[in-house]
Length: 540
Image 1 (spheres, one colour):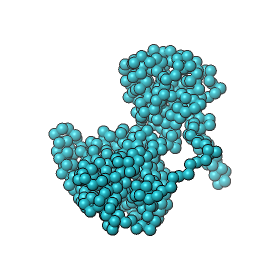
Image 2: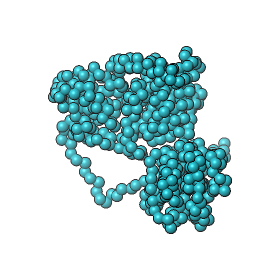
Image 3: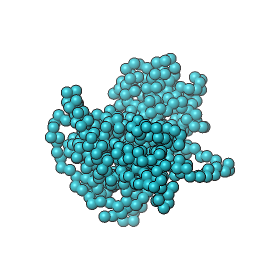
Image 4: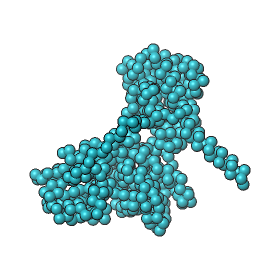
């Protein structure tokens, strides 16, 4: 079969297409975005009739995938680690409903917080849900694991989690494709009450999940993705999980590691392999991206006095992603310190694009708030979060998707007036709507800015679920018509916009201001495509 040079994300996407995928659902979130984007852009996927779509949020994507699984088809849902928090209700309960068609939850973690609010480790969610977890070491393994994961899901009728991290998602390698598989036929569950989680049914389903644990453990113990490699030097044994195994290998260019090594890429962690390693070695070094899941397991399982090294004892830094140098130091190698960047090279922090509509929105808001003082603006997740930086210094919070409106409401309830929320159009439909409904129901005194640039800009310009709907949504929630104000964020309209903002800041109730102007990046892209199409038309 064909060999392709693919990102880790793209390898997962191509594998899903080849493995008989019928539907993929996601909300864009770095570093997972490219999986769904690849399928959406794939000519092969279109020819096969694969449903590939962006959703309002991660919860709706998880539920749509579960619905496709209910109908007997293979489904995938993709998200970043904090997106799993949003999908958690559906995710955890799906372990109780089980699956019909194979379903894989792909979750991309972001150690070192390259573009995220935290470093959370999604393996804990998978362990909590008591389902199999796959953690690929490289792009080829990521590709192969998708095929295996769908088979595993259908064999045990359970969802499977695939956990990847930023470096794997966004690095390229050659990937050998397998032969393509036909999609499943439409087939309803044999037990039509399987997905009804009334307590009496859920208790039975939970027993099935518990009974399957021994099978999941056996599957992991016998998995080709978990390996035990003997070593002559028993002074230390090494457990390397997922991508961490690559960092280990980079410290031994000849691939001649003197210590016994257990590679873990499928969970539950292979207990027999780990016990054997523990029994024959004087100490254990645990290498894993994210939190010390295996290290904590090992200390609880085999705490018999031997030294166990890892993130908990400081052998590996407690935060941040791994790299070969960190692993080399833990192995006892003399790793020279990195040469500091000369002072003549200055940092270049991210900034709003030149011509971005958010700049004019913040300029107006800042001026309107001058008489009230700072500390009144609750913001959200998106490009506009960069308003926290100089020269704008325009926002005071950024916690999670949708938190701007509800935090502004809470602050207003505490007596902070005016209290302002700033949220993007895509984030508003992702998880801001319910907060606005709470504010309307309680008649809270807040001013909500819904920055409408007609796209999901931060992740590359995916379609916004809010396009053309914002005013209708606000009216439907009960915001008074006269306090839904649309402005054009342009410098030439500054005084006109300033007057509107000042009026709404004085209003004692819920008001919504919608600064509306297309994202400068998507506008440029659209114009380029228009010019290209016109040139092609003239040529033909």
